[in-house]
Image (cartoon, rainbow, N blue to C red; front, side, top):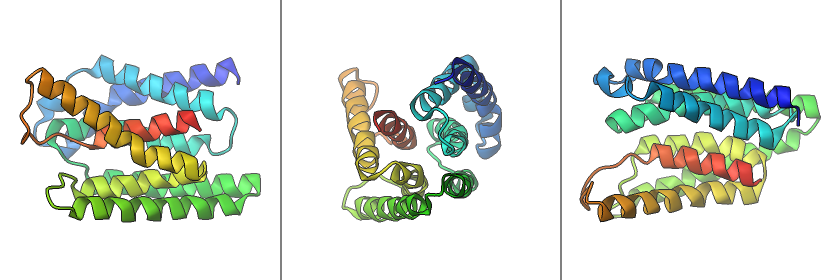
Length: 209
């Protein structure tokens, strides 16, 4: 892997992360909440982009993953601020990521991988719909739509990666909830965002691919 590519990805991710609170402020009435931790989000963006570049290298699908990650950072800021995953952002991640994967499939001459990616999106959507409909479930349909959008890049990398992407968000969220309960920062009925766990789990799944 080129050091130049890794550095460029980290710099782009840092810029995306630094801009994320400003962009996120357009999707919430509490703009003061999204304005916090700009430096922290810049670091998050840099780490996310660098991790993807280190894993995928010169793969023609890398731009698709970086595009989805860019929208993902903004979605995480919004969800943490107001427990929302706005449809325009989720839709842009899905359509942009899908289009970029289509270009990658044509460039690599592997149209079958795009079919698997679409199947991954459909499977993610169906699985999260079922989870959201379970009694006592706290998943919103914004989470369901985001899971479908993330199913595209996860499915592109194969069924094992998709499986990790479906499992890891629940593991991460469970650990976080237990830690917050132990620290008495939340109660059992406290509403918590699930979008960041979905995004972090998908990112880790890609790194494990």
